[in-house]
Length: 313
Ligand code: AMP
Image (cartoon, rainbow, N blue to C red; front, side):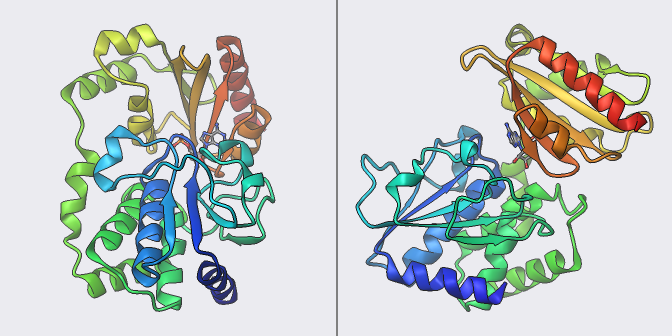
């Protein structure tokens, strides 16, 4: 990776206009890496124009503010974080850019960049950015440290998931040592939730359907969300809690989004790999954590059936 980091640095040094993007529906890893990288570049090169773009996520706005650009300046460098596929890059037309760098920890889907800095064994994109910071000896600040740590903690679910490695712990230890980060302060804003969401969580657990072979699923309609006073992000906030349930090997939450005319599927597994099946349904992701945007409830039923077959196979 060291030589790729050097190549990335060379391009950052070369371009005066730098746009940093990430995937739609941003999570703390996407936002943390994006905001940290903007600050790193700005600190090192104060005269450069550096923009972190994409739709904000209200739940994570405490991590920092995003930029809006009316028009992409000519001769711009684009850095895309945490996004394996072109269709999920938020707010970007690749044609507007002279040079593109991809930094990601997902398995490769689209080859859209001039430099591909991809490590699908890394726990998170924030981990790769942190590794790059140390290799290139870039200065860290408290805010950079907080955003990077938040991204790593969130994507590993507090160091629980596979891909959490010795390297993850090494890098995080170094980060805390260097910046004196008060890391326990990171958890409250990250995990605080309204009581309505906890009550909704109770409903979800009470009403899970389970197939013969161990696929658990629930269909969350907009009416249901309205009844409980929660939003469409709620399902995503609780999906990981089912990781260690004896009778469940694969689990899916379907959340209806009428405005966008789609049904969002959050899919998880502690058995078979699910990312290939997710991509057959127009989505994608990691071996054990994937997602998709479906167009109908019958497609949701088919996905459950296919996941059930996957377990049998
Ligand atoms: P989520 O369930 O939203 O936390 O997503 C889990 C993983 O699946 C993440 O790594 C996402 O990048 C990926 N993912 C989620 N939704 C989609 C989608 N519509 N298309 C491709 N990948 C997705």
